[in-house]
Length: 196
Image (cartoon, rainbow, N blue to C red; front, side, top):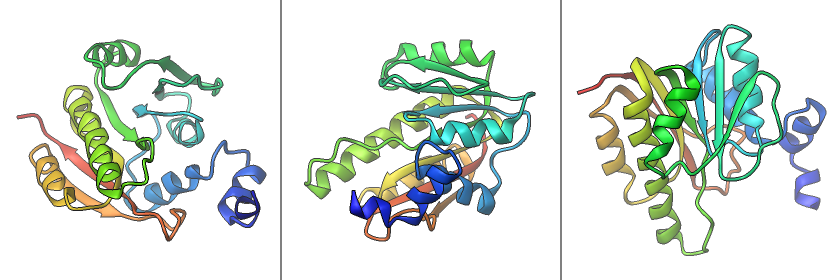
């Protein structure tokens, strides 16, 4: 609790009415890569508690469409469509396509595995979540679309990045300032999606 009160992004999130400090990670990725835009159709995987959804909706504006999905219940975010579901379920892609009204411009994921304390296991589980997001991106994204996804960095990262390059013209890695220094999390930002 004390660490939270001393965390400037936690304090800033409270002051600026974001649901989580993670909102600043997305804002910093946006500042660097500009993947979000007014009028976009966007899907956010593992979207609870909704800090990223708030940022996405602010940028998408009234002409855009933002969808969030999670196993957990998400408190409503004005202008955002919320779905309850498992992103690893084969039925999820169809549900998201239907709710989005077709293919989307951007797919985002800030999903984390349940932390076991065994780093190799946590890294492998994080890679599995990114692969789930990538499989959905390949089904949901328009040509030229983008994705940004969180990963716990480790020995499988290079292989994962190479796989992503099979579907994206641009694949870059970034660690936003709002990520805690001691955290191994990185974000992979991929653009110029092309279907095979």
